Image (cartoon, rainbow, N blue to C red):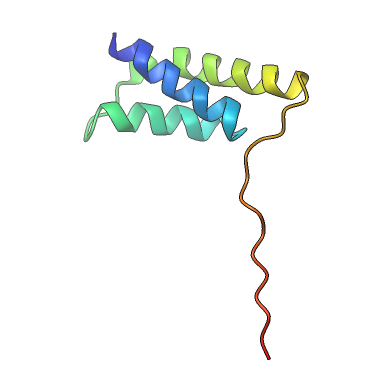
Length: 73
């Protein structure tokens, strides 16, 4: 059940932010505080990559914050 939850978190990051590797690492760290479960690496990575590929194929742009422009006078 924990691996399935990690996979869901990684999938969300891969789809929304367009960063499948970061989503995989974040998902593995969040649920196993202090200990990373390496048996969840492959399922999380595959799900996150597939989510990113699917969103890219559908033309969805990853979420990003607008750039901040500072004007000095």
